[in-house]
Amino acid sequence: MRPDLSILTMAGILEARPRVGYFYAGKHTKNLIAEKIREIKVNDIKSVPVVVREDASVYDAIVTLFVEDVGTLFVVHEDGSLAGVISRKDLLKIAIGNADIRQIPVSVIMTRMPNLVTCNPEESAYDAARKIVVHQVDALPVVKTEEINGKVKYKVIGRITKTIITKLFVELGTI
View 1 (cartoon, one colour):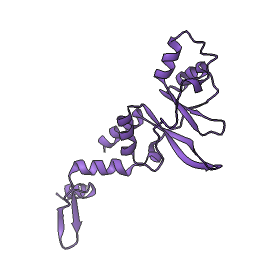
View 2 (cartoon, rainbow, N blue to C red; view 1 turned 30 degrees about the horizontal axis):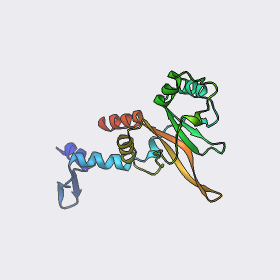
View 3 (cartoon, rainbow, N blue to C red; view 1 turned 90 degrees about the vertical axis):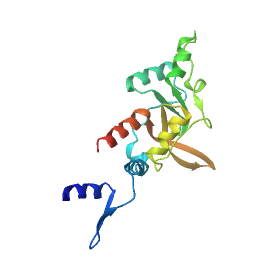
């Protein structure tokens, strides 16, 4: 029976005290999983961002999307700060039309600030997942806020996607 008690203690369901013994900690297993998800930071699970410059053509963006095998591209200014986001749907809409996609810059079709949803590296994985669900997006840019010449700029340092969140939940389910 001792190994079972140690597992329940490690899981946080039981607590152990000298001269008292084992007792129920009052935590439900669902609460323990929720706590674990809230402890994991975006910085711990983010992946490398895939970016294009705002003067890149729509054609170049489509090529980048397929070469990098991603669903969302982050558009950056010359200084590397976040300018916008382009999704597969945005690229599909423009490519289906009769436009010359080699001549159109991505800045014409991207979703711009302040209409972007971002997350920072210190947010919890839960908060990032909630933003993805609430705003119905496929990916979030992970940004670091910088103030340059009195203007707030967002430096893209990573990305969080539906796939990353799903992998995290699968990993937590196997613990």
